[in-house]
Image (cartoon, rainbow, N blue to C red):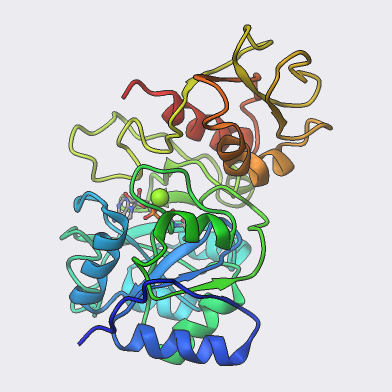
Length: 325
Ligand code: TXA
Ligand code: MG
């Protein structure tokens, strides 16, 4: 039997060994625990148990066609789950643990539940830079499925309190390690065609960093109508406010998500992603900034963000936030 849900979900320090022990026991019993990673907080469960995965879908209110990432504690476990071609191994070697997810053909008879993989023949695997998640995988000796720890369609959480705001009473425990240093989700790269690594979702590891290790990567050919690929619902990372992109300056009454020298002076509500125009800092502050401005005005105008490095992931999330819904 899965553990009963608490009315008030506790937040405990991820560096407290007793909290890790309790988290492991909850996961072992099929419950769900929010765990910090370098990108965003994940809602972890035992990836091998359909009932545990169903519990995560239920907590998030997530559409079921979205497959989950299997989180691992190293390359060995990843290779037991999927068939990684040489380029993927080189990249994992260079970037793991880190903000990179690899999609590849699933091995026969992997223990990962069909519900976690959404019935696909492929599987997404990632070794995050997270002591808590790595320890938990080791203790359970099983991969942990972990989507971002927010209600489906909402902005991803980068602090334990974001998680609590969104999922209080719907999950068993929240482990807290402070704000996530990267702040946008992992980059997802598909090796389903081993000769054509394909960037399914820009994220915390930039295209440039990937290409420096394995050469050119391609973009998906077309947006699939049935989203077998990541966050492809066009409106996904959505604040309640309307979002207007590439705004050199805010219009009267708009809140402004500023960047560098586009400071939005005059706006009543303004949040600068990075005063110095640093894209890494801006990624780490993106979801916090959207949350800070949401509810302050009908429209959030967003400063132009360069499309290089982590700017590609930032712009991808912003385009989704601005999609008509
Ligand atoms: O940074 C991250 O990746 C965070 C942390 C918690 O690890 N996780 C995360 O999970 O962002 P989630 O579920 O919010 O997004 C995972 C994306 C989904 O959009 C899903 O469609 C895609 O990965 N995905 C999972 N398995 C896939 C597969 N076999 N083929 C293509 N896309 C896949
Ligand atoms: Mg998500």
